[in-house]
Amino acid sequence: MSTFEPLVFSGVQPTGNLHLGNYLGAIRRWVALQENNNCIYCVVDQHAITQAISVWGGPSELLRNTREVTAAFLAAGVDPKKHIVFNQSRVRQHSELAWIFNCIARMGWLNRMTQFKDKAGKDRENASVGLYVYPNLMAADILVYRATHVPVGEDQKQHLELTRDIAQKFNTDFSDRISELGLGIETQSGDETISSFFPLTEPVIGGPAARLMSLRDGTKKMSKSDPSDLSRINLIDDADTISKKIRKAKTDSDPLPSEVDGLKDRPEADNLVGIYAALTDTDKETVLRNFGGQQFSIFKPVLAELAVEKLSPIADEMRRISADPGYVDNVLKDGGERASVLAEKTMHKVRDIVGFLQD
Image 1 (cartoon, rainbow, N blue to C red):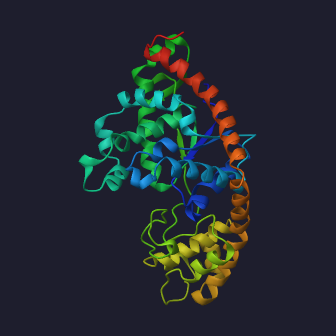
Image 2: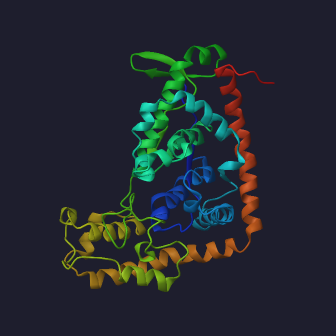
Image 3: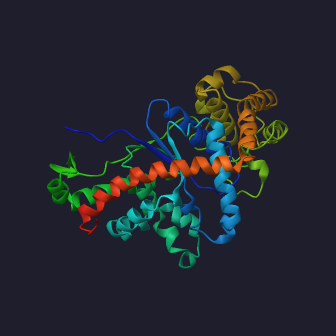
């Protein structure tokens, strides 16, 4: 039985202030995945405009943030020649497939999306339609390349499950047509075999810092939108700023435990141990074997030194790349052209499957 060709896709919104959580939870994993996979990495600028303009900052801010996020990809080690790096709005097929998926997805599926509820807040009637249906666009981002794997954080896992639901329904609804055109791969759907055009994309989730928390409140996710800059380590921060933020990070008065179970109900301690584990490519158990029983007055300086060692070169390279916006724009242009070729191959087949006339 044939299988879908492995392909990794992921994206980050250009909303400014990329931080340690973005790096450890996404970008660093992208660099590792590109060693043994074909990868497409996207700055999802269309997703950025789903909220009020006061949130995403307007056109000038969006342009600046798109270049900054791209610079972060490159500074961290993403290779734009071997793989594809582009901004979403360059490839019109994303929006085209998203409309088809708007007609495939069910209202009940979208009503269960917790991120819409969180972002819309109590004033749901004033939220944009784009914010409501953006999980469908996310599905299109992935499936327009028929990607098989997507590295995501825990907060995006529900959206990837929706992507799988959309792919499954498209495959089921159009199975006969897919088979007639010879465009499918035989897959199992329950007890029956169907001809599938889209893969059921698998999430790539994990690691000790898959969900990094605020340095000021271990119960809240590290966020670009937190009003306190001390809550996060920005990728552009210099060495002194990184050290200062870790020194000022909230902790409790107890020493570090010797076992992971001892981190329960100690969110700030758990967060800092997770950061150390992620930066050293180990796990929390290993960190606690080395630091269990020690006070934070000992642990924090060591963590600060480690963070500076790992992050300062990236910040320096980001500043160097950002100083040449023409280079960044060329990377995105080249990536967009290459992505468009792949996306159009998919969309030409999708139009035939759905029954749209085309040349």
